[in-house]
Image 1: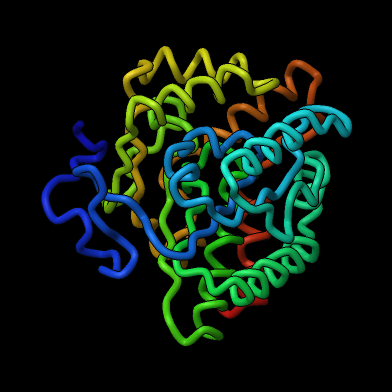
Image 2: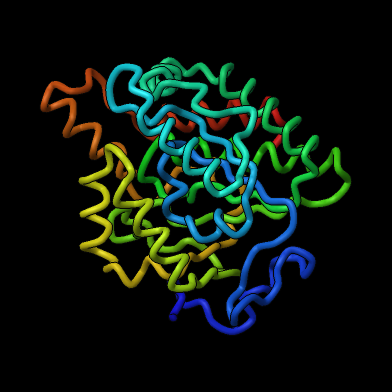
Length: 284
């Protein structure tokens, strides 16, 4: 199965040999793994990897579109438990609206605290591989989770005196996000028929994602569920620079303000201010 972004021979060149091995003619991430996502439900995108690796799972927010609805968080907790995975020290610690309010206010203090908690957890669990939401300029929370997880891995690596390998995956297809490049593909998990059926059941039974499920299936096709790709993320310092394209979350925000759903649009400048505070606090 062809990898996106032109990945070809030598896929594991940038990943330490100790964390990659051959399994049923595919590449699979190994050893002590962790997963850091913005929302419950993201684990469905890499369900096969999770079922094989049983990682320690961080979830930044509840994923509720309104109020304090915890249906998605409960569904993710149940799914992780069913695969013998583990909930991490951060698991739905923020409401989405709380995170957005903090971004608009330029207040990174809570996020800084959560990064420190993540650092300690990665160290205590001697994590060797961390998979984070892809940096796609699609969702503010996705991108912040990406940066928070990577900062935590960087500092935990210093304490452990060895590098924690950090990889990203596509939370949404590039056709939706508008992102042109996810970086070098360094690994792919190809699912067996049983694993594929389990993934399909999990996706079909997950609450509150009907629209996303249909949109992604229309773009990718059901065959895409059978392979999960992992990429080397861009240099952290590059993420502090103004992107060359308008983030899609600005467009979505503008549409919601026009409909009266939001009062204010989260712009790149708001995210940039948070990133600058995180970079200063953690000496990036």
